Image (cartoon, rainbow, N blue to C red; front, side):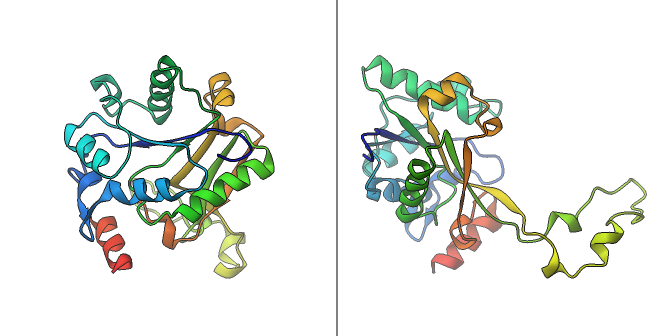
Length: 231
């Protein structure tokens, strides 16, 4: 707990995955992928409760073995491709409130970010409190400037692909861009209940993470990269 704020960490982990089947429980250096996030959350000095929201009994068992709470299995309606993270958060909050358990902050930690550490989590929470924020979202520097990117027409013409003012600059002279890395989403519970479209709020701040801790596993190549880094 920090400044009398009760914090709930939610780790969303459905059983289905199209690009990398059963990715949430694939063994990464001998441990199920989800266990890396559970361990980081449980090591945080600020988190009161760490729970896993899943529809999969196998993930439920592994999560319980790792010390996370899995108080119920998520419904099929919240386990399809159309369900959003906010849908899952509100479902979890509704459950805990039905048990007369209330939280001030909710921290969404996706299991596909195994290199995110308890230090990253603690620092994001401290930033939240320092800024008196409505939300904090983790980002990392883009590998390549988006100014060097564009769409392509059907005929693959390169005309006006990059504007002249960008072409005349060295890459190191271009502004630094950041992207969401999917590792940490921290919300004030009452704020998201008022407005679930949290990114439109002027009181949302970025927590900058380094590229190493920002690996997000979406497919087999990402998984191999994470293995190589951890090795």
